[in-house]
Image (cartoon, rainbow, N blue to C red; front, side, top):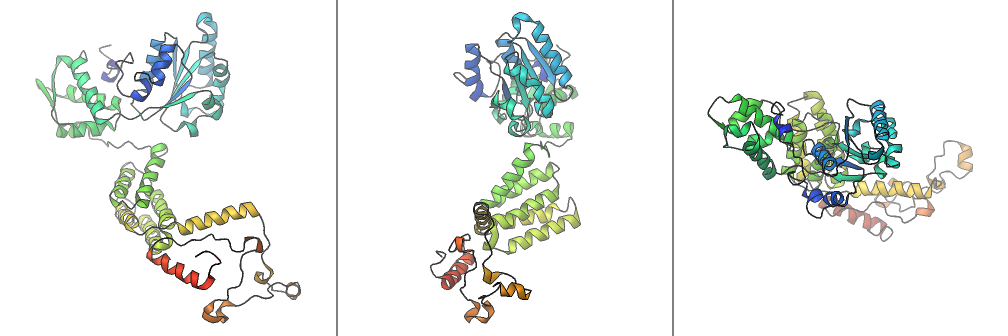
Length: 424
């Protein structure tokens, strides 16, 4: 055990030693009550790396006195699943109590996940799957419906500090050294909330030190690790969560948050053109006619990113993010097209009114195509007031000007032209 990595040596073996996830294992919380009652359901443990998913699964098995079988979806497949199920069937007395823990279950294909259904449904095994990805996207519905989904939260800074202090005081190796953590910022940042990474960094810093007293400060951490501390999976939930945070910060007119999430995405290696596309969408969806220049800015930003590449591309991206965040906002045109699309779904292919139809041939003219159409430019103030919508939708309002200076002018113009027809 002394040769095992520090993270393994410090792995808790009971719920009382387990740090964090109080919403699941605290007194009178769902998992602790389940263990006390002797009933352990199949479950999916969803959370970021290094928050204790594997540890929790092992504790559940140990405290419920159940056989524990562990496989990794990265290295295993249907063959290994079937072997575990066959072993459980042969166990006789323990059949139905065995726990099958599958790490990174999201990496199993649909057919591989299907191979679990029968054993889970019959209660032959209790499945505990661990995933860093959203199970609603990565785990098949049939398996999800037979399992409880529990969300594990990232460690707080105080919890990460406690993990370090526990290791210094309790670990069989580290407790023999005199260790002082003088500065915490770089050490905690290097972990990205991952306890395993944190303990690996601590172990490395101690091993590298030849001093009688190991003093850990920010400079030593940066010098020892020399690696990016940003946790960002471009294909995982972080990809969508960061993009969502960026756009919502722009929508909420917070330029500081917008450039922060932009920096997170860029530091994590996100494709700058993906970011530029999101900014282009935001310029139309969230700003729209309140400031049409936003679309021009976003479009030019996309072109600039293509021409410049990185790292210079961060400059126009930052400029655009700040511009969009500080611009007036309106989703009126966005709402209008959504309402119009909904009307089309509900009403189907309504005929175009005859006076609006094209009439390139005499036959079409004889059939009434274009008859009665009024050329608006020939009307007073270039406005005829004729009907353009199909009769079934006459008077339907899709576009409602937003409460901003530019669209207020548009509201007055529309009201002057259409009077009460559209409620402007």
